Image (cartoon, rainbow, N blue to C red):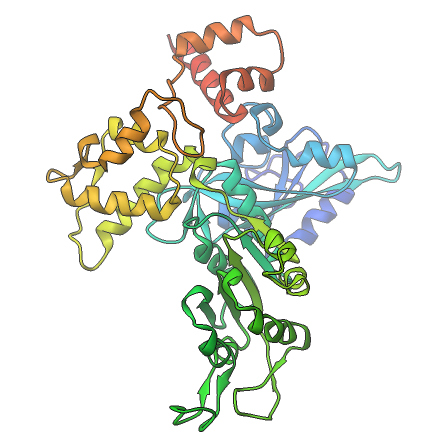
Length: 460
C-alpha cells in the first residue's frame, strides 16, 4: 500500500494535514475497514482492511466522494433521501451512526457506518473517520438463506439489532405473527460475541403448563412419574449462548415468577434437585401479543415484562415494507427451488402476478407469502407464476372495487409515468421531501427516478 498521504497512483494530496496523515497510519492497525474524509466528502485515505473488503481492481477510491463510491450517487446522501452521517456529525459536533446499503465488489450489502469528526487546535472540523462493519445476518439482494430486505422499516430493525448485539441486554422482538422473529433472533445471535455457542429456540405456545418447568430447567431421575433419568433443560442447553423464548406472552403466570428469578439471579434448579446451577445465556424473547395490555389486565407480570423489554425492537409487517415484496418473493422462490424435496428449477413471477402480490396487505406476513408461493410454484407448469395461480381470495381482495383499510387490503397503486413525474417536478417549487409526499413515494425512490430521467435526457 502507498504512503498515507499519497493516492494509489503516488500523486500527493497537498491539503492533507500532518495530524490527519498520522491518524491514517494509526488506522492501518484497525481490523475494521476505515476511511478518512475531508469536510467536502472527499476520501483522503483508506486503510488496508477497507481496500481488502471494498476495493475494486483498477478503481481508486482515494480522491473520490464517499457518496459516489458507496451509493453511486452524484449528490450527498441527504440530498437523495438518505441519512447522511457527515451532515449529522457536523451539526452535532460528535459521532453519528447509521445503517446504509453500500455498493461493494460483491453487490449491495448492509453496512453499519460510524463516523467521527476530527478537530484541530481551534476546534474546527478538519476531517472525519468513517469505520464500516458489514452486516452478516441480512442481505439487500436475493438470498437463499437469512433475512432479506432493503425497505426503511426493515433497515431500522436491522440497525437496532446491530446496536444491541454486542451487549448483554435482554431483547424483546415485537411484531405480528409471521414477521420472521426467529430469523431476527438468530441474526442477533450471529452478530453477538456468543455466535460460536448454542442458539436454543423454545416455542412457549407449544408447551403445557405442567411440562414447562421441566422443559426449562430439566429434571432429576425420579422427580416425577416417568422421569427414568436426569435430563438437561433448555437453560443448560443454551449455556454460553442465546436462549430464544418465542411467544413469551404464552408463558403461564405460575412459571413467570420462576423465569423472573432465573433472569435476576442467574441461577436455577432442576426439578427434583436441591442443587443450585449457574445459568449463562443471552435472553431474546418475542411475542405478537400486546404485553403492556396484558400487564394492565393482570395476565402478565409487570416485573418480568420490565426485565425482558430492556431493548424492544419492532419487526415490520409486510405491508410496512411493501417495496420489499419482489425481493422477498424472489428469495422465497430460490429457497423453494433449492429445497431437497423439490427440483432445482426456480419459478419466476409474471409482472401482473407481482403487481397483485405487491397490492395485497398480507395479514399473515412472510409466512403467508411463502405459503402462497409454495402453492403457486406447484401450479405453474411452465415455471412462470401468473395471476391465475394465486389464491382466488387474494385476487378478489386486491381487485375488489370496495374501498378497504390498508391493513386488510387495497387496490393496486397506479405507477406514476415518467411524463407525469417530470411535469410534477417542474411544477413543484418546494423541497424534494414535499414532492415525494405529494406523489406518495419515498425521497430515495423520487431521487432515483429523477436521476434516471436526467440521465435519459442527456443521452437523448
